[in-house]
Image (cartoon, rainbow, N blue to C red; front, side, top):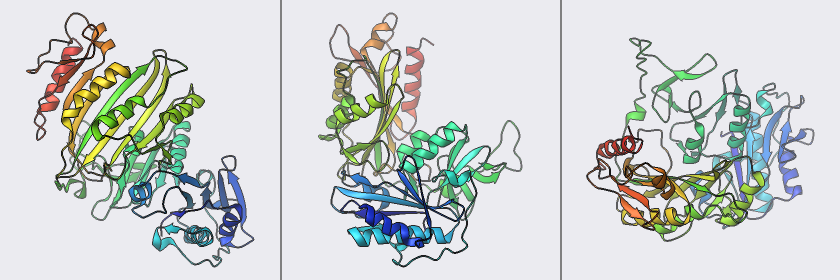
Length: 472
């Protein structure tokens, strides 16, 4: 049974419905709270949590349950209530399932996954105990060592849920890596991929043939010295570890699906009238004809798109940095992550964005110069890189090899062009020279990279351009 159980209900679970669900272990079960009451827990006689229930989320963005759970939710707006069972305790998993079933039966809706929905009878938990602190103190963390925190995610998409966000934060504060373990067939949200960082944090996939492997690199892994680490080949040396790659990771199937990826950075003057998110919306409209569908500080994205509300959240959290996820609609799958940071230069927005296209769909490459010009002239663009890659239309990351994207264009903002010595920015070693965007007296420059999307020539052109711009 899964460790995460979710109730999707058309009405907000009232306190009595939540209480009825919490009594799934009987009236003698202890109830505790964490996170200033945002998380309610069913505990064993020692006060250690069996099931942790997060406050219900109101989801006003269509398609999030389909994207993250592969299930149909009630019409928006609906309520998303998550319960997480303590790892390795069958009774805890039964408690979570019964909690969600009771909730759905009282206020309508359904429980996910379907096979986790149990009866509404009290679950027998006499004599059940769980792992001691400190691992049980953080509901999202299943294993804690001196080197890493391990989270087990048994769901179709490993998403940046509030649970996982808390685990990232707790691991970072403790100076630990975070390792996320999921079963075969699971995909990874790009929001999580952008947050994983480097070693020893990893996405770890269970595999019948090789045991465990890194879902992003394919390296075969074993549990050793308190964390999952690569297996060394028998003929490995210190200079050449020759880590074996899982056979499953190497099974590549070209479906013809592609992703158009954009990474861009804007630096705005600090101003009380500043509204964030406008550059992202501009690009979205230029390439799809519509604005983003929704946004949030975790997944699922719960709020309809609103640059003003996004700005308010970032302002409330300043001077601390803020992270957002932004999603598209069913017609054009897309996902962006936005990091907003206050620096000496101003307010920086760093956006990573991907649009998905099927085998019969053509990415709107002709619209890229107009999108770049809008960013450069209206949104203080510093730089942007555009890539095209063979990848899934749903923009999820599979535990399989996906080749690198091929650079299609690079854009240098007007301020960066102005401060570059001489005419270096305007004269490059590329066959195709840059296109000026915006006013002639203070243009940004759009550099087409005529690489063949079927090979790595685009990267060679991009590297030559970067060396030239840096004066190397």
